[in-house]
Image (cartoon, rainbow, N blue to C red):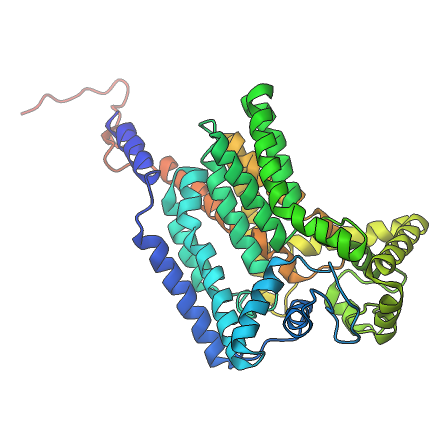
Length: 443
């Protein structure tokens, strides 16, 4: 009884608010290691001219959210979600386009990546009721910068997407045991709307979570809260959709480049990995193909992307087995990404397998919370299964894999500890008298 009481007390203590020193220490470790490495590698400085950089330059130079490609000025665009390029353009106005901009943006990216690891204890507290799992897994992630380039380059929005998803899950999970207030649902909707302006694939995740509300809280209570969340999310994203309609003639939901990506990823010359397609010499993407860029400029972005979408659909209908083959490899590569290091590839493969084991254990213990993670793992990757794979695509949900892997290790270790005989339990070590033998009286 005393042992059970001690376990219950320890569990309740582990679910208490996280002592602030742990997130701060994890952040400091992650930030220091990453900044030290990019300084030692001399990889801090001017930013690469990615699509986001080009759009930010167009905003500053021409006042147009457009021209994502250096091969030609193609005009206004919805190729990218707006929030990251707009923030980049504000910094560009202040710092220019040289090394100073690179230093600030890369430092911001490292800080955002470090903040994700710093959230591990709080996420573990709400997911597992044990913030200690988040402490040691947070320190492990902070000390192992295997995604150093993605977490420091500053040229893509994936780190900020991961931070936004982690924050939204932190607040969403808190509402599972208590019905959220309408004001909470308003913040929920607005938060996911802001995250969608960073990366639109988060929207289906938010939508499926809202559908789960109907099963948890009943039709009447869930309907009001779902309507408030949807309305507030719509208020955030609708201005950009209206802008797309007025400027481009198409009310695309934040981005409009899916047809292009589907086309370059599914054709006779396509390969599953983005790097292989770039190196093939037959990559018909306006970013590197001047002829495609000129055709896009002549037709207009909306018409050009629709043409590429129709081309991709026709190829998929004519080559279903080839499409399924590419897709199956892309699914594998999304979860078990090959990197330029065998050690990294093996490590992340083992991490994913542990995460799957952890999810199985977690689902048996806390089904409702596990469903949230299951929605993230099931819904978020879907768009990436049908287009060329890049290692950065999984980064926004890597924090959940780390935590579920840590949960698996903690659960197995706890099982082993409980199975081990206790030295304090004398019954395990009392010798049994031999049947029929006389027991000598004490002297």
